[in-house]
Amino acid sequence: MKKIEINWGGIGIVQLLQIIFSTTMIGVLLIFNVVYYNYTSNLLKDNIKTSLRDFAISAQYIIDGEKHKNIKDPNSNAYREMCAQLAKYKKDVGVYDVYTIVKSGEQSTKLFLAAYDAQETFMQDYIYSKEMGEAFNGKITTTPKPYTDKFGTFYSGYAPLYDNGGNIVAIVAVDINIDSIQELKANMMENALTVFLICFIFGNILIYILARSLGNSFKNMIGYLSKMGEGDLSTEPQSSMVMFAEMKILEHTLHDMAKKISNLIEIIAVSAKNVNDKAEHILDMIVTSDTASQIMASTVEEMSSVNRNAASTFEDSLSQLLLYKEDTENSALAYKDILDSVHETKTNLEAILQFLRRERVEPLNPDTIVAFEKICQDLYLQYDLFSAGINNQMNIMDHIGSRRDELLKINQMIAEDFKLVSSGNELVVDVMEKQVAAMRDAVLDVEMLKNMALDLQEKIGNLKTKEVE
Image 1: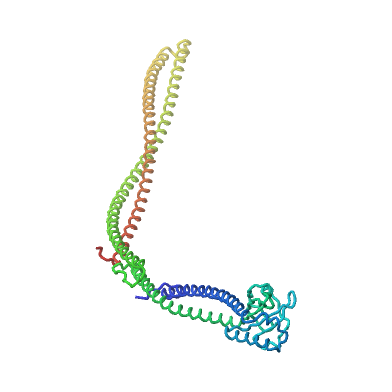
Image 2: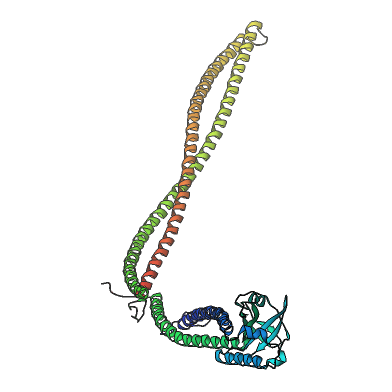
């Protein structure tokens, strides 16, 4: 199996944890060292001021203020003895210099005694500071920060020097060179760096052990999760030595999750099989229904075609009946015309006969007229029979016409009914076609569902699951 790593810019989880922990430790150590250095620097300043006060107080007791007041010549024995005392004090306490200052004006001073060859600086003008003025007023003072004169840079402490009458005749000054303080600060910094390096080395060792333990635990869990992602649920997470209870809880949680996933996969497998069986059953039903629907649609289509043909036939018959009605009406009119002609002929013959009887036309003899009259009587009889026949024929034609009208109405109703049936059949055919299309879509959906169930069964079959306890 490939090495499992969480990649973040190509860094493994162990290295990542080491970097995080080391960076945190370095930050903490740096903050600690800065705080420690500032604290010790301030403490050193306070100690320097306290020491300078103590040195100035002790120095004022090694100088006799009365003798100091009476010295006028730097070549006198008293002057040299006092300078020797200051030199010895300087050597004993380890300060940079001890000397005395006298006031020459309101804000001006002069050097007097010194722990070095003081003759060259005897009564030379010197600087004036607020702390010196406070010392001339009877206070023990120290400089708050280093100051620089022609001899160098120093921290100084001042104490008043009294004569036998309690008057301040001078002040004693004690100097500590800034170089000494810088050396002390350098030593403090060196000690802080030493502590930092020691803590850094041992801290990195502990961080490596911790990161290694956590990293191995994460790798084991990531490897287990990777197998789960690949479908292998048969393995269990490797137990690792970790110092955090949460990691153990996570391992147990993953183990329980694998069991529950195995149960879920078994349930899904059973459900997939049931879905497949149901899909096949529904597919068979849909196929059967589809076949029946197709047969019904074909039958309805055939019925619709028959109805359309019957409606067309009835419409043709109706057209023929209308033509027959028109011919019959024309025949009846022709019969009426003939009947009218017969009556007119009969009337004309009657008029001729009456004329012959009345006028006795010559050379016609009575026998001829009688014969003509007999002929007219025969014609009258034939005309009456013909008229009776025509009337009877017209009555028959009227009866046929009434029957024909009834038949025409019935044919019209039948034609309308066939049109309605044909329209209904067309609607039924459309509905059947839509139903068939819907069933075909349902077949496709069920086929897709069946394929999905088979694919799910195949994928579940590739998973390696553990047996549930």
